[in-house]
Image (cartoon, rainbow, N blue to C red):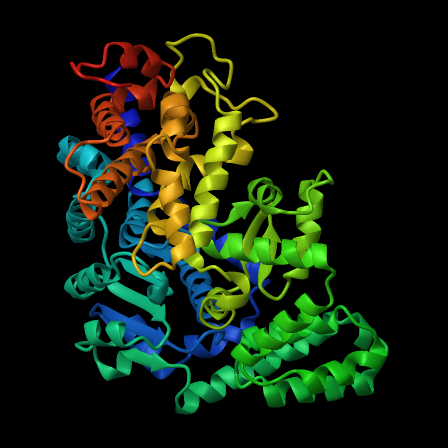
Length: 575
């Protein structure tokens, strides 16, 4: 029994520290970006500065920096595959993505690296679990970073983990805690070999200013730019083989390659986008399309967005904008079912019954910006989202992004109110443990999983400062006494908590969400100078005490929360 308890503790620990498996994140990235081309990364393996860092007895940081679309991620994937083929290498890696809240924080990075090292070392895992077992609860609270940092420093100092190598891609996409992560990287660099990549960001430059200049590799400078350009040329030669319009015309194929090489400016992503346009045309239009394609990612995004929007009918234009605004605002990639939930609620042309197949077809109209993989919708690249936010926000968010957040919160609450019910999985037995639960088929929570987890985040963003009057009125409408939020909490609060527990999102996400609601209610009351506590605020205060008091019970036995609510020890309870 003690062995089982120990195993459960270790599993719970690994689950707490890391919400995703970096191994599968890498596989997903390669699926999205295409297979690794040896010519695209082989040059770095023989680079003098990289080789010196790699084979030196000393540890330290090696930083690869470059503009968007220069192939940094694929470079690191190539390096990782090379290192993985060497036995005895103690390697951990992590890929940050700003568009996915599961992998865009310092906690996620360190948790992912720890997962690599500890899953493979059962003795070290047991030691860490034993030492930190009293602090496990803090891994989902405000002290989570401090605890994770202490664990990481202890793990990399352990003698059973000699010469650890940590690789982190896209530091600039670490949206929360990047400075803390950089401080940890510098602090542990005497013991750990760190390989990191990012865009040319001044804040990162300042934090890494102590590293040797020979360990900073800029993809835009000198010989490095030449290597990247050669690699992009090899990528072009490979990519044009997949263009059907060029299959039987060697002369056109050669001239197309030459034009692409002259305009690419060493940017893989530019080539990928243009090749995507050429794959949808016939032979006679190839030259015309090539001539229209501007140099530079920003200009290319602009042209493709204009062309895509103008060729759509009125109904599809509306859907195009809804899909782009929803994906841009979402806190993680959405499943097609989840995207359908938001799209059909916002669509004025609602006489028809739309399906995930329709959404799939509409996403293809956003092809230069979005991609579908395993039923999830992703931005093709962070620069695609950046373009929308920086250059197309008036088209995509005509009423401002806070209004879009309010709309997503409203859609989520409406959908949850219509769907959530007591014992939604029909478990019947209140003593059913979460480990015994398997989702039914079809899963009633699948289309609303995103709404369950993130409606509070969108509500909070909708109430942020510097919003326009329409946004403000929309937010106030949601959060007023007996408004949408209040009605939902009165009618569906316990069902929402049950759903979060069944989705295994109650801790930390659900607990954090209720605490965010409490802070938001307090901030709004303070801004309005309310002297008395409203019924909505009182309910949220109660809800916060409830989830904190019964967190451990709800996580293990979701249906027990209804019994817990009847004995909730609060003399003035509202729940």
